[in-house]
Length: 116
Length: 113
Image 1 (tube, rainbow over the protein chains, first blue to last red):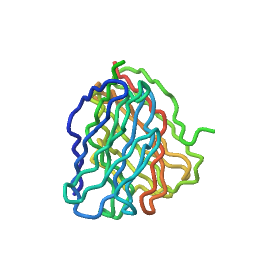
Image 2 (cartoon, each protein chain N blue to C red):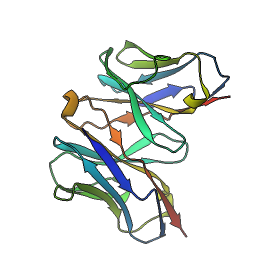
Image 3 (cartoon, chains in turn red, purple):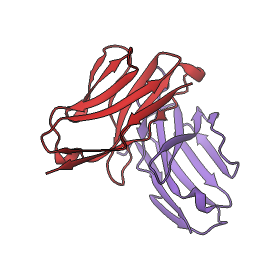
């Protein structure tokens, strides 16, 4: 079985500060891990994904995430927050379990607030 | 061109009615999905079709019936709507091989009154 836990439903940072959004996963098979962003009243947009090629994954808009197997974590970071980064962020896991249907299992989401 | 498009974007209807949401993808993907996002923004898969064949049905009430006329379309029909069905419904598509990214539609906000 697979699951995802995002620590912190709401994160607030100042513009220019470091962004750190936490994600821990549970998976009995090698996982594929994703971060999606949802802007208000919009669909989900992929920020980055981990597919076992490299543990440090760079995504769009200056975001990156590091896969740490020993900690079962895939935290999302950005060195300097911008006002436009304010959105809902979702960590998700998929994998080879259940015949690799491509099904995404999402965390509960983290709302990122960026203060001027 | 929109990769995954759903219609309508907003849907307000009364309890007991039957409604449909349509989804189309122009990416040539083999697999399409319906996800439900509740009022707390939690996302959960409902259904998945691969080449018009149902492969995931996540214990959704049988009032919900997906239909895939071809692999580019996956519609969601809901009978006898209930207040608890109010949510945002997202359609998505992907190629299942490896860790192919899923592309999401803009969502349909369903409000049952």
